[in-house]
Amino acid sequence: MDAKQTGQAEEEGDKRERKRKKARKRKKTRKRKRKRKRKRKKNTKQNKRRRKKEKKKKKMEKETAKETATKTTMLTTKKKKMKTKTKTKTKTKTKTKTKTKTETRTRTKTKSQTKTKAKTRMKTKTKMKMTTMKTTTDNGQDDEENHDNEDDDVDDDDDDDDDDDEDEDEDGDNDEGEHGEHGDDSRRRGRRR
Image (cartoon, rainbow, N blue to C red):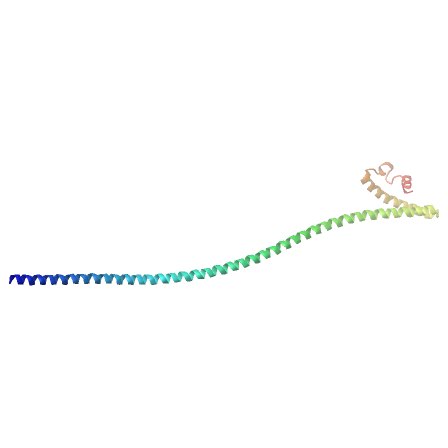
């Protein structure tokens, strides 16, 4: 009986050990499954977040690319407009400069012309008076007329003094210093003839 009992006891012990082993295996498998589930959940959540972030990034990049493209086009158009404007401005500036130069030249010319014209007028007046005096003396008119002409001679002498002043400016000599205020009449008559 002892042998039977012992054999039965061993069998029962083996069965219990088998059951325990199986129970341990189940526990381990359950643990693994739980771990896997947790990991899957974590991964799925992380993946979802990652995908959302990536989508947002792509959208932002597209928007920024569009904005930059529009900005660059606007800037290029503005630059072109500014270039054309500056070109026209420089052209107008050069035109005004040339106008001012021509104005100054014309002013100086008019001044010199008026001076020369006045000198020529004075000379022609004195010459005309001299020729009238010659014609009256050669014709041999009355004494009264000759006396009147002599008075005209005095006036002509005054004009000649003015001419002598001009000659003095050119030559540096004048008849008044040698022959009094009015100068020598004989010399002047000789010049006329």
